[in-house]
Length: 220
Image (cartoon, rainbow, N blue to C red; front, side, top):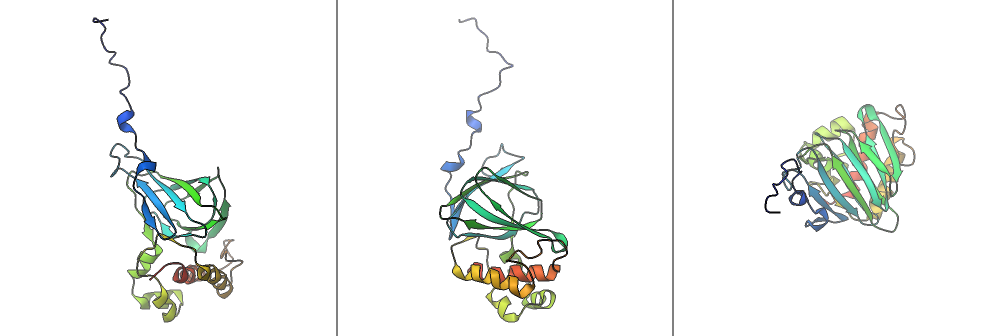
């Protein structure tokens, strides 16, 4: 009635605190698209950021790492093969399907190869309100070629083929799949899964394999 007083203990409506990620304009790349929400797009979200990533068949999410946050990947549909790099040449490759979760520790390099004939959708969460990433392509482009040849034991020809900017998600390329196997053969790894065990090869060989794949997977 007219004498009713509003209960001050009731929680306020959360309608104004809803962000429709699927309505966001995507960042369209060669092999897929990303929708990113962080505290920049959604100020109330101060402790998490999220990405909805859609990969087309055969796409490659290039090697990158997040210097400030851990990462959780939930596979909504489709599949992918994920490879994670740790310190001292450690590497692990796993296959992921719908309903599965991948965890990537802060600062660990990783990349994804889409698998299957249907597109893959992944919901990704980070334990930081700020989204940051460093791509391998951008990191390489910021270093002198002589540093790469001297420290990684790679040829100048390979350095010249490396991309000059981040590709994000590359489209299907038969060449990069071939180069992945070639890199494995030339660096002493197994089936393209270099350093599956801690002592299988040196850190330098691991990096060399990644550089060879990168040279064919991303545009210059």
